[in-house]
Amino acid sequence: MAQAATAVAEPPPKRSGTPRRTGATPRTLPYLLIAPAALLMLGFIAYPVLSVFYYSLRNFNPSKPWRNGFAGFDNFTKAFTDDPEFWHTLGFSLQWVVVQVVLQLLLGLGLALIVNQTFVGRALSRALVFSPWAVSGVLTSSIWMLIYNSQTGITRYLADAGVGTYGTSWLSDTDTVFPAVVTAELWRGVPFFAILILADLQSVSKDLYEAAEVDGAGRLRQFLHITLPHLKDAIILSTLLRAVWEFNNVDLLYTLTGGGPAGETTTLPLRIASIAVDSHDFGYASALTSIAFVILLFFSMVYLRLSKFGGQEK
Image (cartoon, rainbow, N blue to C red; front, side, top):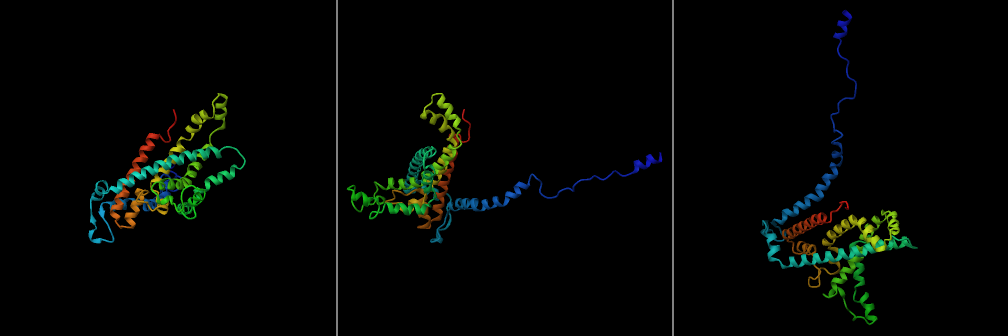
């Protein structure tokens, strides 16, 4: 009995194990690790966007500080009702985006299909196709300025061959300036589509084409029913990205034409840059930037919704 009473009276043994952690739990650790990058993105992206919306509601011109102050929606009212240049530049921007994206997609798709074939010199052909994409926008503009130079460029050689007259400048003629700048931008933009589409073509199983040939499908039916459905997401993503980039295009048009002649090649971003840099009217420029931001955001959401990006084919 005494031994039993002693055994009952003994304190319970201490639990062995690791001490309780007081720091970050495994569930919160990933968020702590990405917090520095998230804060940097917040500072470099969110702050500029919010500051643009803030200044769009104000009259802000450093050269006329006595007029600075809260303007409400006056800048937006001015854009839609009192500024005919806004509608002209917006219309040209839409025209520029549609023409560029459609032509770049078609030419890029054709080049990707060509360099995806097996032939002698394929590696060199791919390098030549992709090389314009590695050239900066300013350098691209300089190259095409030399090509379109009225004294030493292509028009000089055409005049020597009896086509056209000497001293003709395609960049200063309202009838030829649009095709000229479109061609220059195509040279730079087509490789972007070719690169993305070729990368996606590499993942198409050859067994699908072999099975289609056995079933009697020709090249056209194979392209329509195998290649295009497989390239759907790549085409949607590349066209969306390129549409946004072309809408915001400033460097090539500014260097080649400066928006001229007679404002024929002035896009909305180019006009925004002119208002902010030349006129120092940062309030109105911020309002136009906000409008452009909303247009691109709405277009992107509708485009992704209608195209069913990432959806499965039924």
